[in-house]
Length: 316
Picture 1 (cartoon, rainbow, N blue to C red):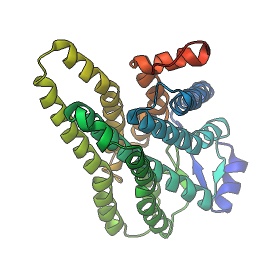
Picture 2: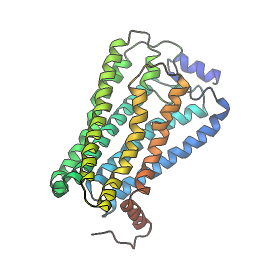
Picture 3: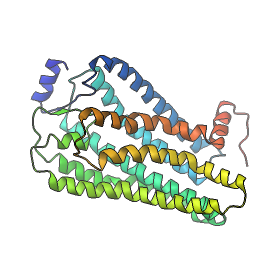
Picture 4: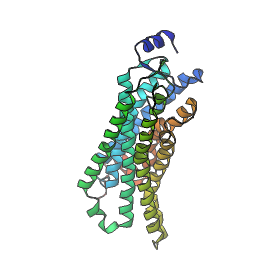
């Protein structure tokens, strides 16, 4: 950490992100890798959003929700990655309390939106496989727009309340955050006040935001599995399961890592282990989502081919 910058930041009351302090020699390499991952994340998700918005072959509701997921990943990465790269390249660079609060608000809101979107996408697959004759009537364009708006807005009030509550606590000095971004866990460790009520309410809200959508996803796929097992054709079973495989993989990656961190906001993990686990949903998952959906989806690959070769026609 550069002493002059760190001292100036502390004097102003800024927070200082300390990223991978235990391996200072690797910071330039990590910065280069994260910059590459950031570029791939923006490019891949922007491409998914463009394809699902413009290609006539990707008009099904599942692609509408996939576009929303890609937009969430773009917003999340733009919120987290620039400051993470700055912390790696310029150790000791301060983050103002207002900037830290804004980042936390956007992170919590993005995580909530992704939880709800993944649940809606699971419900969409349930209706498509278990109620195929009524799919078009049930999953209408108007309902898709309403569900997408609800996903984007549902987590914002909760995120706003807990961000304002957390930043109402007095913080101890030095304000060193040993994390990839301004998150609840490292901020709680700096609070010079009794945070037990906050933690209890935060845990309850986290259960609602993470575990309720996860429960809906599990229920949806139990219904999907039951319907698939009743199918007489092995080909039909494989086709039905293949439409769910990409979504299931994303669900496992996202909920597996997000739940570990956010269900125990003040758990006794070391800062290094928290940073490592956070990498999975901060850097890895947003970058892999476009690859998972494009490489396993014939329609997305066909749309990409039509984008590269405009002479190809979309299916009617």
